[in-house]
Length: 239
Image 1 (cartoon, rainbow, N blue to C red):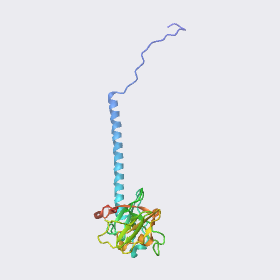
Image 2 (image 1 turned 180 degrees about the horizontal axis):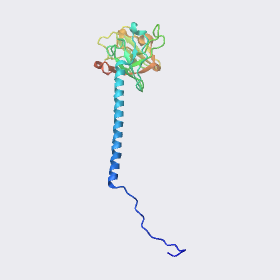
Image 3 (image 1 turned 180 degrees about the vertical axis):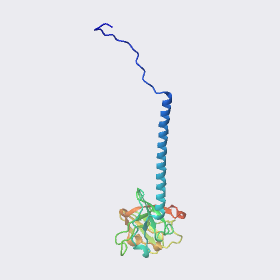
Image 4 (image 1 turned 135 degrees about the vertical axis):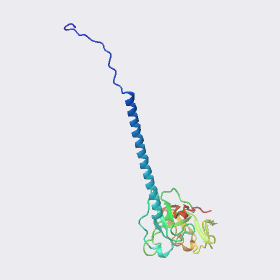
């Protein structure tokens, strides 16, 4: 090499170090094992959460629920329990009177949907009674069946209910069910429903306190959830 000159040497770049096949295999297996372990942990967490939710729902269905009241004077003015269940848009209530027999029996625990689109004739609803409907202490929520809709004319003759002068067929009633207290002929105001209990002889309803406001409706009763022997949908349509 001459002084003051520059000599360049050509060279082939050294190839980058690569992992041996055995190392890559070990690394991939470790990653796969860790991913599988995480999936198993997630599945166990989801399964545990599902079991807890199911058990909670059963416990609430069997023991929870806010009381519903009817005509029974012994329980009519008893303050309702404060432990009403609120899983999502469903609440649970307990029927304590015979006002809706044979559809509902005392002790039935009822699933009530609080988010609904529109109510129809025949629907069974839970609602807050009108102010002053009962003497004494405030009465808890009631459960009755919608018989008349806003703008309709409702009346009765004997034991038959008439809507717009047409007899109403009510297959959910016990055969020979007496109306007892007649329905005064009236036009149902806008935003109101005329409600009756299925046990007409033992029900405080619109015959006594008039049509109820749509705003007073808490929800639509859909299912008897307990006792198990009574489990099933609630009959909700008239003919």
